[in-house]
Image (cartoon, rainbow, N blue to C red; front, side, top):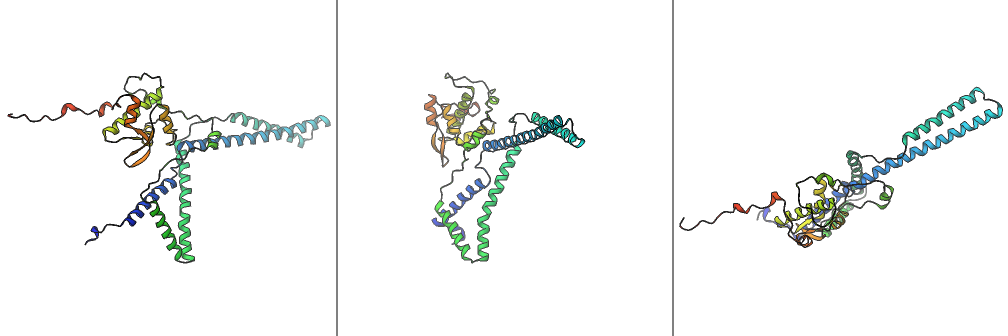
Length: 321
């Protein structure tokens, strides 16, 4: 019997599958992909706002100090009938400092939210990834140090523990999600308005507007989901996952502010039925073909370029030909 004919047992298979699932989850976490772009954007804006407020406070404090110094010297001059040269220099310096800080305050003005360079978002995610990767190396460093300084039992125990964790996980894959934006961050950046850019896709080929009064973005979203679900049905799939729909939309520049957790609510607001479905072995929220058919009251329409051409079907050969 050759080595190729030997198949691994269920113990090894389950442990290997669990190790793969844990490795994928750790890579997802260590890469900072659990943090959405919206959260990173809001944190950058929050840092800018805090720096602006700190600068304003500093200039106001220094301006008040300079004004108090100048007022004191003017009072002394009024009482004594003048100032000595050194005190007069102090008065001029205080007035100059007060004017300088007032000009700085006028230049700062009110905080205005400006566009954030995408490179800053990537840089902040890279910083998070570097920190998390460093944290992941700490257990491995501890095991190596313990094995070297204490006993080899540390390595054996840690290896057995890791294998047990992989076996316990087995074939159950982790749900790679993005954490919601913290409530305190939303409150601190409430002035930040993230508006989707649906208008860019409204100039596509003209189609009939549905009778119900939805809104331009709802019509665009319903049409996109209808085409995607019909295309999935043509590929013999029962539907499309919500996260896949969001990824396609964001690749076109739409709904960039939405997260996978919040997008199902957006679909429901457009009267698109959403429930937990299974597509290619993955169970998550999505839009099923039969549910969308019931909601539309008709079969979902395919994009024109995907409609199969039945006129090219081969004819059966006739007898006697």
